[in-house]
Amino acid sequence: MRHDVRPRAIALMGPTASGKSAYALRLAQRLDGEIVSVDSALVYRGLDIGAAKPSRAELAQVPHHLIDLRQPWQPYSAAEFAGDARAAIGGIVARGKLPILAGGTGLYFRALLEGLSGMPPADAATRAAISAEAQAHGWAALHAELARVDPGAAARIHATDAQRIQRALEVYRLSGRPISAWQRDASGQRLPLNVLKLVLAPPQREILHARIEQRFDAMLAAGFLEEVRALRALPELAAHPRPLDLPAVRAVGYRQAWEHLNGDSSAAGFRERAIAATRQLAKRQYTWLRGELDARWFDPTASSEALGAAVDAFLGNPASGARCA
Image (cartoon, rainbow, N blue to C red):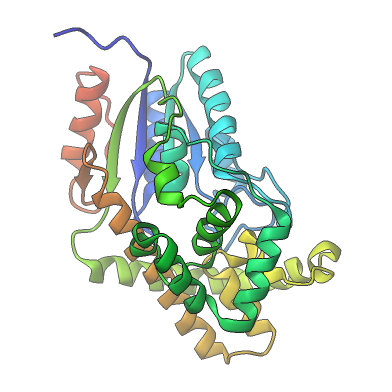
């Protein structure tokens, strides 16, 4: 068998609240690595508490990349992420360090590891038209339209996933071709690294649901609503005609907090809706993760020895001490 001489990297995947960030930090400290965030919320400045962004102390312990790249009113595409991430990984490898890719945004992982097709870029006018239609008729109606023109994409995209519905319809309207066809024909070059894919996910959903609830209550106690009030006060967001159409504001938790501060829900109703939305996100992430056939799954609370052994074997280390506990 030919020995794989490509530089190695570790991809830590998993649903929200599964402990990816904490384990990535410990792994980086033990293996002289640097962390590349694969999270669509962490790219935005000001999304800290609600996005579970690493603290200043954690950022000081290990180099982190692709955090705080954009203001919350600025666009950032998966293609831009892939380019930025590849540049960051190239620098990490050149320094002789181990790239650790950690996050739960499936589109970002796919763009980075497998490359993207040459589908049309974002078009502001088309997006504005789709947003106006959603405001008038609801995203469920637009999901039904997507089901007519691209049944494959509609089957994968939840009827409440406004961002992905908008992008799929945008691509179809600009090119006359379904986004699922573009994705099948993706010709982007795969990441030229030997990547070990690890999924951290509790085997019982009830455990993850409890962690989601506990984490959200901790976010509230840490001042999450005050963080969103500060975002709303930014002149660029205060003056935006449709802030809820912005990807940053649509992030899970932020949208529900924004609507609550608009007076659309009680405090208890806001908490319930935010937790429910986070559980829906986790469900979508599980669906994506099950499609990663070359990934190895571990229970983050009970598989520390097996997880560490998998890392050791991949890196050829007799004992790295990279444990989950």
